[in-house]
Amino acid sequence: MASTLASPVMRIATWNVNSLKARLPRVEEWLEYAQPDVLCMQETKLADEQFPVMPFSALGYEVAFHGEGRWNGVAIASRVGIEDVVAGFSPHPEPEPVEARLMSATCGGVRVASLYVPNGRSIPSEHYDRKLEWLARVAGWVKEHHQPTDALVLCGDFNIAPEDRDVYDPKKFVGATHVSPPEREALAELCRFGLIDGFRQLYEDPRLFTWWDYRAGDFHSGRGMRIDLMLLTEPLAKQITWALVDRNMRKGPKDRPPSDHAPLFLDLDL
Image 1 (cartoon, one colour):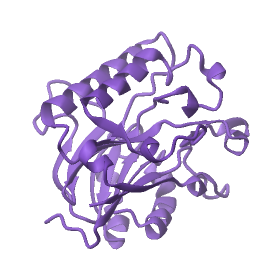
Image 2 (cartoon, rainbow, N blue to C red):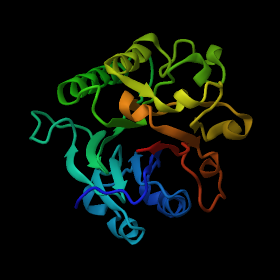
Image 3 (cartoon, helix red, strand yellow):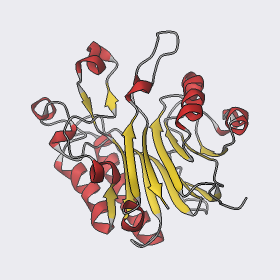
């Protein structure tokens, strides 16, 4: 399908839905009122044959998805066309099994990637080492397949708080993942390529979070982190007109529990 825009403004969003099976009604609700042109999802936790294509189609979205069942899973929903879909780092078979943590597609003339970076769990650990290895692979993939002048945006749960102002209390995170110098350096490597933190281009304030633990009333107490990011090349970053973390979707009744992440979106005047 040809990629076309009915409006010069393109709204691109990212949301770790923390199980699309559990959260589908909330995603449908959000799509109806937020009206993103493209939504990147992470932690869909569905095998490909289980993905709910029809509800998205009913709302006017084409979908591409890359899942493995109980864990991980990424997807892209677009109402401005979806072309050249690549699941993983390469359109060709990869030499070893790859977790469902990355997929990319061209939507409305913009190359969009949905990423779910490994958590890392603890320092030191094999999970932390694997996180750094995966981030290095992302940096290599970006440099090999893209140019800083491309219309490219990386959207997702990076599991990294870029700066101390992106966590509720830096003292609480000393020695923990998400804030360690090697993780932040991996993110800085992407920025040195030419990617810009789109949300921070508009808002400099601290404590503008996207994730809050379910436990101990962290959301209502404001104990969160900004770990969901949208990194754009400069040509796109110059077109940002508005950005929002939709905290309303982090709220919800017990019979329709929310994800522990809130959706983030940017508007681009193309």
